[in-house]
Length: 285
Image (tube, rainbow, N blue to C red; front, top):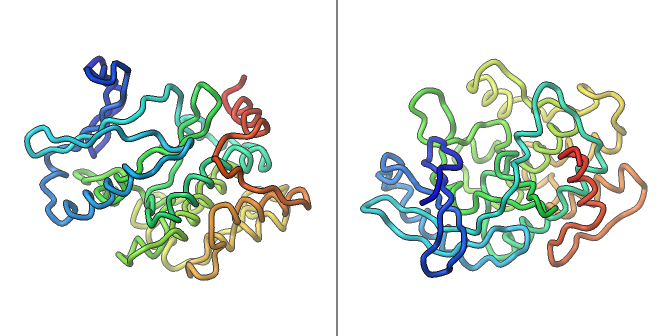
């Protein structure tokens, strides 16, 4: 172990030197309180087995899952960079086409995972990594099962209802369309400077998410195209069957709404040059 990188209510993340791989890695620990939740154990292990089979340029590699006593920890690829949530706040907005370009690898990673029966369940700015080498990566695979909703002091996980699909909030089984909803919520925030259901408390956010229709970005940012707003609103529909079927389709429709043309998702998940330029704009390069 070399140093602590971050900590949350699931556990901590450390930078470490792997003795066999001879490289720097990230070690994600799961706290004993969360690890004791027996109801999570079986699904958590199934999710992680699915994660080990994922090989995609926008998904950090999982090297191993091990235990320290009864507490599991994950050893993953270490990718220097910053997370998208550090670029948000105080009404900061970004140009819609640049965000669509930036999210291409994220959509590709989600569609790839969904094709292998793996749902992320916790797509949010804190799990979108803007790497120093220009890549955009999706972290947090395998942790959406053990992360519960942040319901105030003593909450056992870092999931807030701001980006979570309504069906998950009520405990229904979810599929890839729940991740499509979450990706749309992230795009809503990055292009308007506000989260979709801004409220004073988590319980009010939950209530609005469950009972109010999805918001329209033009209510917050009237300068955004009406067609863009319509696509994003549909992607956040409370009924999963009304949303775009895939994350790639969502981005294609958003781009078409902005430019009038379509662009295919890169099959290998690599960030296109335009995406790298969008990343550079976010990082001020």
